[in-house]
Amino acid sequence: MLTRTKYAVFFALIVAVYFVTPSLAIKVTELAGAAHGYPGLCDSNGKKLADAEFRQWVEDDHLYVVITYRFPDGRVFEEKSRFRQGSELTQEQWSWKELVHGKPQREFTADFEARVARAMIRKDNKDVSEKIEIEPGRTFAGFGFTMALSNLRKRLIHGEQLQLKAVGFSPFPTLKPQVVTVTISYGGLQHMRMGGRSLKGDQFVIHPEIPLIAKLFIKVPDTKIWLTNPAPPGFLRWEGPIVLPTDPLIRVDLLSAAKSGPAQ
Image (cartoon, rainbow, N blue to C red; front, side, top):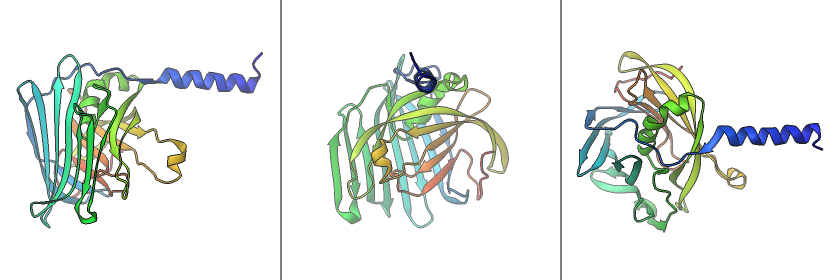
């Protein structure tokens, strides 16, 4: 017979399994098409650091996304993604690079079809490439999570917590590519100021499930993404580390302005 304590633990385990469920391949409910915009990149306090250009288009049955951030000092960040939108959403490629006056300084890539990821930091003469375990339709990187959330929005708003896989990299000096489980949950409807306007959006939290032993050595921050409200859901705001978990936290807003306000 279960004691009261054992029963409570047993019940808690059932509740955890019930509310946090691994997500199957994501069904496409929000078909993305061509889009063009000019977001802004800010520091974690909302001070603008760079202007950006967002381009999204469909070509040969693929969806392409390119986001380019240009800093006053000549630095450029560029993120590229390629997706397939059939009955399910699948990310096929992702890359992020930092350039100074046209010369690559840092570069991170993931080829989901070849199952290979690479990290390069020029100043440290470090270049790492390894095989990674990809679950097609459940593994994403970078802007891929905004695409995934657009199609999972209704389920998350209704209280589900879902688990997907994320491609990431260990901090320097290892830079080891790895795929980690992330739990995605709904953070509520929030208001924020950007571009001189007051906007509202649905917040979603992407929480990396890092093994306890690894937590003793490194902290991996949550990533937060806001989608426009009311529907249809589109990108509104992103907050998290640039690429590596030890990178500075930044904010990317749909509307660029000298200052952006916190979500409340």
